[in-house]
Image 1 (cartoon, one colour):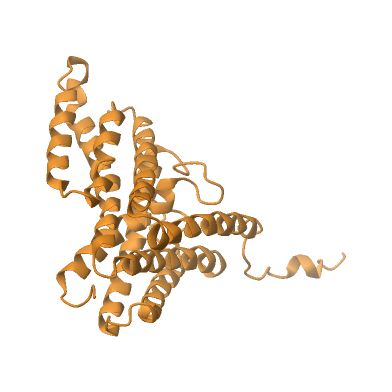
Image 2: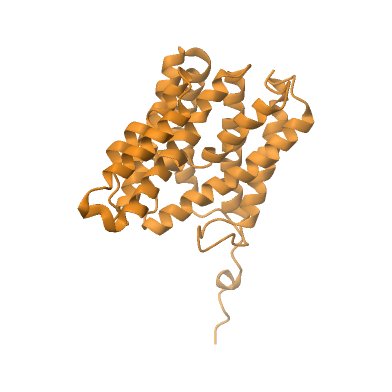
Length: 285
C-alpha cells in the first residue's frame, strides 16, 4: 500500500477565506467614496448639504427597514414613516423632536383605525414607530453633534471610532476568529473579532487627541470603550432584525450591503456621543 500523500496529511494553516480579499477590496473602494463624501459634507459643504446628506441616509435606511418589516407580513405605513423619519434631520434648523414624535405616533395610530388593520394594530403601529425612532431619530442626532462647539470634529470622531472597530472586526475576525459569538444571531461573528473591534475603537479614540487636543485622555478612553461596545451591539441588533426577516443584506451597495448595514453600528454610538459631550462641561470645547 502506498503511503498517504504528505500534502493531504498536513493541516491547512489558518488563513483568510479566498473570497474575503475581493469582498474587502469592494468594501474599501465603496467606503472610500462614502468617506470622501462624508468629509466634504462635514467640513467643507454648506450646512444644508450636510443636513441633506444625513437626510439621504435616514430615508434610504428607513426604506430598507420598512421593506424588511414587510417581509414579515406587517402592514407598515412606510409613507408616514418616511415622512416623519425624514423630518428629524431638519431639526438642525428648528428644535421639534418631541413634536415630530407626537405627530408620528398620532398619525400612525389613526392609520391603523382602518377595519382591515385592527387585528394587527399594535404590532403595525409599534414596528412603524420603532423604525422612525431607531433609524430616523437616533441617526439624525448627528446633526445635533454638528451644532456643538467643535461639532465637525466630533462628527468625524464618532464616525472614525465606530468604523475603525467595524474594519478591525471584519479583517481580524476573518483571520483569527475561532470562538463564535452569539452564533444564533450572526454566525460569522467571533469573540476574537469583537475584541479586535473594541481594541481598535479605543485606540482610535485616543489617537483623535491630535484634532481634539482639549479633551482629556480619560474622556477619550471612556468614550472609546463605550462607543466600541455600542458599535458591536448596534451591529448585532441589525443582524437580529435581518435574521428575523430572512434577509442577508438590507440593500445592494457593492461590498457593504445596504445603507442600514452601513449605519447600523452608528445608530447607538451617535446618541451616546451627543449626550456625553453635551453633559460634561469642557468636553465639547
